[in-house]
Length: 194
Image (tube, rainbow, N blue to C red; front, side, top):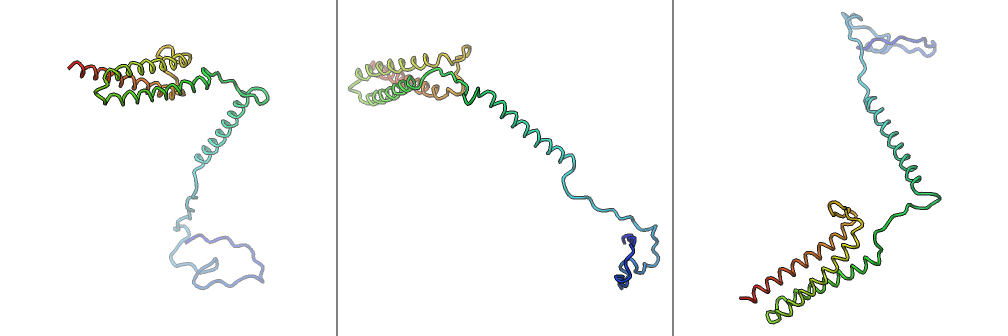
């Protein structure tokens, strides 16, 4: 049972009679209980986050805001004077790459035409001549791509930076076509000798 609360003086006009059943400050006490034997009332723990967590989250929020503001000012400083943007050095122009792309499409067309000749056994010499012409054309396109990308290649490994993967993919397609034509040419020559 909780400890009795101290009473404050109440005007006589508002005093109430004690409640029946021993409840309230003026109610009767249970027999055999002593105030010293009762346990002291300890309120339960408050619900909520621990103070260390709250302080840590507050620190992270302030630090994040500081980083974003610092990055904003840093980016503005790099932009240059009055709305100018930094100069990006291009290694090739778009028109040069468009010409090479057209040659790659032409090489694909020649490759497909050559492969179509492979199925006709009566045109073996025409097939061999077409294979040689197509391989010569594809190797010329590969050389143009190599010349265009030479300034950005890693001088030690010869690898291209990640942003040039599209160029690498086109060059690999050309190499695969040349390899296929070379195997077809050797296969056709092997059949002819038998």
